[in-house]
Amino acid sequence: MTLTRLILHNYRNIPTAEIHPEAGFNILYGDNAQGKTNTLEAIYLLGHYKSFRRGRNEELIGPADRHCRVAGEFYNEKLTENVCLTISSDQKNLQINGKRPQHSNEMFGRFPSVLFAPEEVSITKGSPAGRRSLIDRALCHTKPSFLDQARAYQRCLRQRNALLKEGASPVLLFPWTEELIRAGALVRLARRQYLERMLPLLREAYGEICAGREIANLVYPTSYDTFTDLAEELRRNLEKENAREKKYGMTMAGPHRDDPVFMVNNRVLGLYGSQGQQRSFILAFKTAQIRDLEQETGSVPLLLLDDMTSELDRKRLDFFFRFLLERRGQVFITCTELSPLQNAGFNNMRAFRVQEGILCDY
Image 1 (cartoon, rainbow, N blue to C red):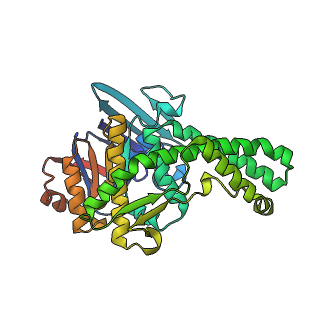
Image 2 (cartoon, helix red, strand yellow):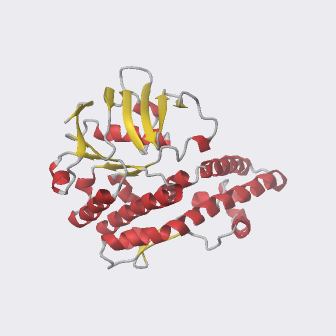
Image 3 (cartoon, rainbow, N blue to C red):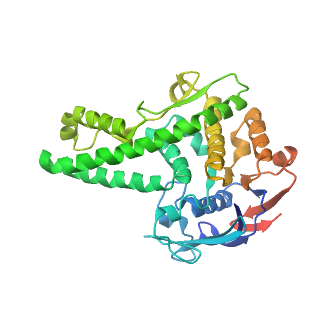
């Protein structure tokens, strides 16, 4: 899959832009705060329909209008598809080939992209929510139906929490508890199945980065791998937390509280890992995600690299540059200078200079 055209209107600091990327390497370069990451974010939006940054819709909209627009043209196996996302302060309107999708399965996995951004390194030491999100975003591209499962669980969780806050009777709470168990077991099962498939690829990639001197691992906080066992486990956990749920008025067990443990050499990365090990782990995770996505779907995702050359040291850059040069997919890289990429052998690339929100060919 290749992004052949990108059109932006009133997107953050970019008043208007239209570029025609190459099928291989595309470099967005220029000084900081000029719009490079904004452009990368816009490409990410076309496949994920939400930003990788925190914030409200209003923050995506520039000063020239009350809405912004991101549009892309994708080419995949002799088929050209168009996607357009119009964003206002209170809603996003998505159209694919001129029609509004009716189901999430029509959206997710259709224009896959994998992002590596500097802020993701902090996920290893941050809150469990960041680690869950990292796994869930990757999972959605190989299993789009997971989004519906996760949403169903969240809807049930909100309703159950509302009843707990009201001090509802066990009779009123019972059907929502049963639905939470069913939906929660499905979410945990999908995560377990994805990680079981992806873990060997993660270990392999990490071993390549560190020349086999260290072993990476990712432990999900349940050992069960069937729906029935996972449902029974969640039921037991909820019964154990019954008193605390009444006290605090919220659901105290379930996939919304799971903490996936990132490890290197059997030590918890968030507690004992060096900055280099944390960067290596995230780099290996993304590499494994790409390889898994290609194996499972046959689709080659876009790779979006935000300020990579400043975030990784020489050893990790060398590994990732080799990985990129071996790939057959489309890559977008932001950087302040072209020379590190040119020196690494990225000769067949298209460069776009970004200055004060204006994109132009190098």
